[in-house]
Amino acid sequence: MRASMRSNRSRDTKPELALRSAVHALGLRYRVAARPLPEIRRTADLVFTRAKVAVFLDGCFWHGCPEHHTKAATNAGFWADKVNTNRDRDRNTDKRLSEAGWQSIRIWEHQDPKQAALEIAAAVRVRRPASGS
Image 1 (cartoon, rainbow, N blue to C red):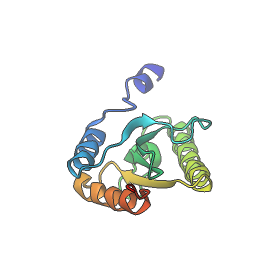
Image 2: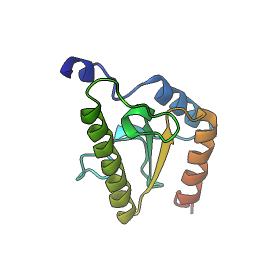
Image 3: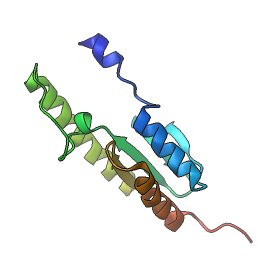
């Protein structure tokens, strides 16, 4: 079990690369796999520090997508607990970021990256501090 868990990529997955490419094509720049709040051990997939927007690209299995999550055939109890723990942590992360003035955006891995990028861009542009004189 440990070997199979270690082989799962935590970053640079195909959905993540597609999303980053789509966001970059809209002219936005971001940090990759960064902690929005350094004191909290939670890493966002894309972080827009000036706008205080943290984007999380959630896997359908790992985060319990209502559309695509499937129950594990073996060790079902363990995996159900794992997914529930992930969901609880996601809610806690969103709450803590919100309390610190950040906006969390959660994207499912199955979502269209171009549509998701437009959603992200809209949030970043609204929250970006005005620059200039």
